[in-house]
Image 1 (cartoon, rainbow, N blue to C red):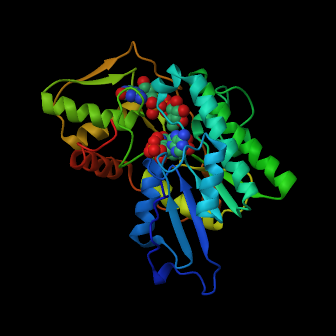
Image 2: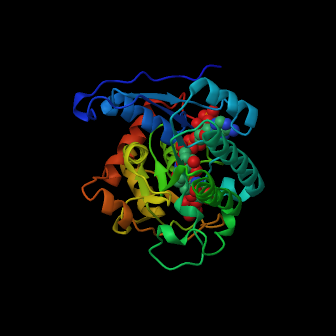
Length: 336
Ligand code: NAP
Ligand code: GFB
């Protein structure tokens, strides 16, 4: 079908100097957690008069099919690409499907970057993740460490496919002079997440489980010990940073987009924040038969701070409250 388009909304304050050449920004993965957050920020007024944004989902194009991607690029004629589309899942989904995570994401990433080059796209910003770094590492993790050793075994398929985006970016820069780069978010949560109890990430799964436990008067079942540590970024904050990146970040080397090391919380802290947001009064149980996954993957956002020293992240509890409210308001249609 035709790619959906979101008409540009004029915001004088954000306007660049007049005479900016018109750009068409294709957002793959536009229907997902991060894509819908970018769409919300753009249609909420952060768009520029010279920008035309196109958000697509898998119903517009199966990006594992090179010919379909070529047709998409012929139709959209993007000058810029924010490449979010991927097979994405939480710890338990990764543990059960490493080969699929590798093959599907390798196909999608090869096709997107090959078509960016074939169709002379000026800039492509892809997405890695702080969970792809070496499992045996010093802390805090920084952008220079991506290839310094094997990733955690639970998601080796996804991690290696993601690392190849960095290799492709360097290859297209060296051989074709391209400015294709990548950002490295920490764990993301927010509205329009994947609330599946088997394939989703921890925060949407906890939101879904607490909603059901409260409705049925049952205990909340947390997997693992709750002790592992994570940095969580609110999808709407990540959206603002990705819009900044596609406009202003000009390095080929990737940049970590994460809250600071000091904002790292435990899974149990996340449980408490979700429980508080629901005002859940039931019992909280830990099923320690279930895996904990990586204990920590503490990343430094010093590079981001060198570019954007003033950027304000939404406080974690406030972001959790907004995410819980969205789920309650959209329970029927939410992905679960
Ligand atoms: P998500 O909510 O699962 O959305 C995935 C998106 O990719 C959807 O729009 C989906 O389209 C699209 N997609 C999947 N397979 C496709 C295919 N074969 N062809 C075309 N489109 C396809 O994922 P997300 O959490 O927004 O993640 C976005 C990016 O951020 C990914 O690159 C992910 O690796 C990265 N990231 C996520 C996290 C996190 O915690 N969520 C952390 C770090 C990095 P449909 O809606 O049609 O299925
Ligand atoms: O978000 P998550 O699934 O992935 O978090 P990772 C897993 C942690 O949350 C483990 C605990 O310590 C789990 O024991 N947990 C507690 C739960 N209850 C639940 C629950 O109901 N569902 C889930 N899913 N976890 C992923 C990578 O690692 O990080 C992916 O595998 C992806 O590739 C993502 O990049 C960002 O943070 O452990």
